Length: 227
Length: 244
Ligand SMILES: Nc1ncnc2c1ncn2[C@@H]1O[C@H](COP(=O)(O)OP(=O)(O)O)[C@@H](O)[C@H]1O
Ligand SMILES: [Mg+2]
Image (cartoon, rainbow over all chains, first blue to last red; front, side, top):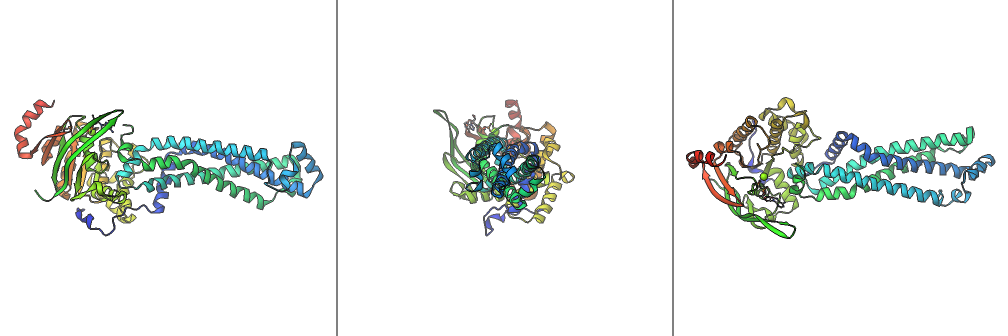
């Protein structure tokens, strides 16, 4: 039988802890348990990131085409409205593309903030309970950040692969078999990696404010939320 | 009485509602000894939960102090307060507050995780505690697969996780039917004896009277009277007449 040890006050270190792997464990549980909600949160990210990687992939192709100066291919691109000056050097994308990319990513972050605020409200009680059990503010913050990071990673990976895949087929539709000459697997890999990193960042950025709200909440406030 | 584990001294609590201020606690003085079973009785709205939150370090008094082990808890920083909540006090709520995404066992071991206890030890002790509350077979169940009474048992096991000196229970039987409520009360009583835990339970459930060492009657933010068990048995007929 367990014995009560009231001597806890004499422990040398009065510090509560939450090991990192435990945070990940809990975060994974939360994602699984709220799979549908996680999917919705991630959906806008998937779309934005696939758009991003699609655009970047195409920009890479355009750059290669213009530099290789393949007459037929250049003609096609010019016909589609690609301007060589944007792709040969500089940013690698046209100002219009950059503007649309920026807007789509902004909308995506706003969407994430919105759904995460709702998600946090739904979890007030759990957050309050955890605080009663001894959780520090930063445990709560960390849980939300890890959760968002994982969601971002998954969503961005799906989005990046999806976007690149579409762009890949699109390239074949445009250029036929000569597409092989313009596709660089290194560049495509870079596009995917950049997209995934960007997605994680956006996901974490979107959860920052909701997570801070949650972490700062006093246990009593959190508990009385909804009965 | 042994040395006091909880001392409430001149605690008042005001809430501001728009422009007006209401005083919910109007000066509470209370001393609770180690291992006592205390019931805080009073009608709904009398300030039981508010007092519960003060004693548990979940909210700060407007004036006055709460001492736990003779330490004024308003002087504690965030880390010490978290430590107090984790190791020194176990909480039980009317609404059970089992974390929805976790299994029974994970709920019970969570305070031990925060307390820095290794996974294996936490698991072993979690199973012992679930056994103690009669839910050993249900350790892998999620809250939604458990009845209210079972959820409250999980909450009790969780409250005991770090061998707290104090268990605070706010209307632990409030959401349970009569017989389940009774089982929970006897479980708490059994645990308080076995583990020498101090139990402070806010309630308006008169079934609690029989198991209490002392009953603190509170009404409109003030302590009306404090009765020992022996005094109680005399007045109990009268109580059931006045509280129907
Ligand atoms: N956060 C708050 N803000 C304003 N009034 C509150 C708050 N919490 C409690 N009260 C008021 O304080 C009184 C006592 O509440 P409570 O302590 O919950 O009573 P009990 O638990 O005995 O039913 C009630 O009138 C309630 O409306
Ligand atoms: Mg109450």
